[in-house]
Image (cartoon, rainbow, N blue to C red; front, side, top):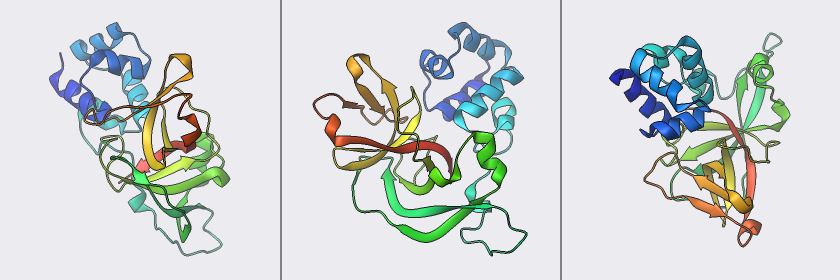
Amino acid sequence: MSDDFFQRLVKITGTDNQAEIARTLEIPKTTLSNWLKRGVSKSGALLIAEKYHVGIDYVLTGKGGMMVPTLSAIPLVADVNEKDNRIAIPFYDVKFSCGSGENAEVEFDTGKVIKFEPSFFTNRHLNPANCRMIRASGNSMQYYICDNDAVMIDTSATQPLENEVYAVYFENERMIRRIIKQTGGKLCLRADNPAFSDKIVDIENSENFSISGRVVYRSG
C-alpha cells in the first residue's frame, strides 16, 4: 500500500474506511485497492480532485496546496471599471454551522461581494444569479469545509443529490451537511467529521427541513 497516498486520501475524504471512499468516488473497491498498491492513475487523481475540489498535484504527489485556489486572492469589494468583466456574488451575513448547529436568524446582504471570472460559472454550469456566498462555522465538515471558510451555494439546487453537500435548515438550525438518501424517503444529514452524529429527516420532522442550496465552492 502507498502509505503517503493513503494518508492524503484520508485527509481529503475525512475517512480511512476504504469501502466508504470507494462508494463516494463511485468506483469498484478493487480499483481503489489497485491505486493503494501501485499508485493512483492520472485519471483517478482527476476524479478525486473534481469530486473533493482539491488540487490534482496534491492528490498525485502531496505537493502544492490541498485546496483549490482560495477566495482570499479575490478582493471582497473590487474597484469597478470598464475592463472588469468579473461577476459579483453577494456575501450574506449568515453562518451555516459545521458544528452542532446555529439558531436560524434573518439573513441579510452585507453589501460586500466576491468577484469571479465568467468562466468560473460556465465551467461549472452555474447561473450566477442563483449563487450566494455564506460563512461556515465549526469543524463537522472538515477537511472538505473548515471553520470560517467562505462557501458558495447554488440556491436553485434544492433537490437533494446523493452524497452532495448542502446548506440546510433543520429543526430551526442552519447547518452544512452531506445528504445520504435512505429507504422510505428518509434523508440522512451526515457530517464528514465522524465525531458528529447523523441527523435523520423523515416524514415526522420533514416540515422542519428545507434546503437553502448546494455547496458548489468553498475556500479558507
